[in-house]
Length: 229
Ligand code: SAH
Image (cartoon, rainbow, N blue to C red; front, side, top):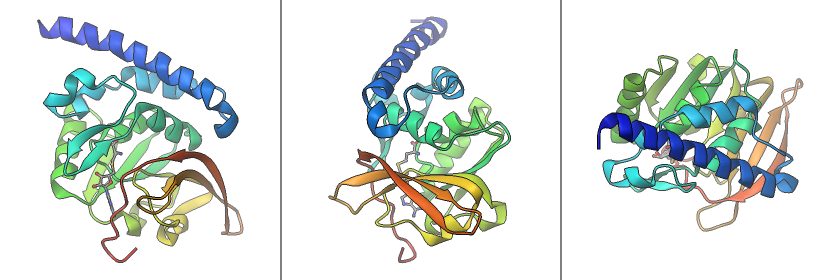
């Protein structure tokens, strides 16, 4: 098959995926408080070529609404979760967002379509380098990837309008809440390995404290506590 035909097939598959994710928003709207995907996130999901962010062997499954292995024992998250997490941040075109757990780079790409600048931290060097190269190749000049421990955040680039954590933490890391702007939001799965995890939205208050809300039960790979968590 020619690559033009491939591209057409993938576009059709992406449109189907967007419809599936949309249906899942409707099914979960009572829990999440989100009745529909935002127009911005829908456009992003319909545009970002997920097949470019998965290993060759997984490409035929790239547009299924499910997580897939990306090597190093890690996974690219389910598209529904990527979309929902992005919407829960209430992203705006002028926002600067931090991601912890670059993985494949897919979530960073989806974010890069809807905000001004994305900073993303990955602990595993191989994954981080591959993702950074891929994001540059696809043309996301507004994503910067750093290899490091996400528990510490990226204070030099903060404070952030939003922080998205894509691996589960046993509790909300205080270094990350410290790097949120007042009114900023963090989306983070919280719960120990083997425990029920909850996707939480943490909103920073003007007085420096924060409010948190459990949105939906989820299952993420654990955030590795490199520096003791
Ligand atoms: N957002 C990714 C999904 C990543 S899975 C995507 O769209 O593909 C979670 C990622 O978090 C893994 O790549 C894992 O290596 C990384 N990770 C785990 N602990 C971390 C830490 N302490 N700091 C930074 N990244 C971490």
